[in-house]
Length: 90
Image 1 (cartoon, one colour):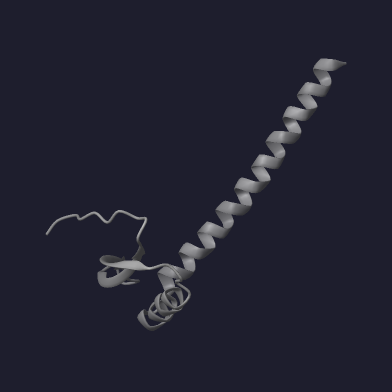
Image 2 (spheres, one colour):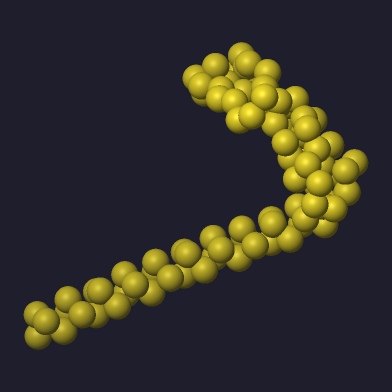
């Protein structure tokens, strides 16, 4: 009897974990699909919206954002002070 309860609880735990992971993965894939099909103007609006809600004092760093055509768009990105900037390349 006790072994059956443990197996049932383990099965329930696995089912709940699978449900959470499947939902998370579907959201992630949806975001990736939308981001890859976004135009430069749409991405720029998203960047401006993110910058407008920033309440932290930030360092300004340069970062590359992948555009929908596969090229890299260099952008200036505010980074909170608690993040240690690092550099790749020159």
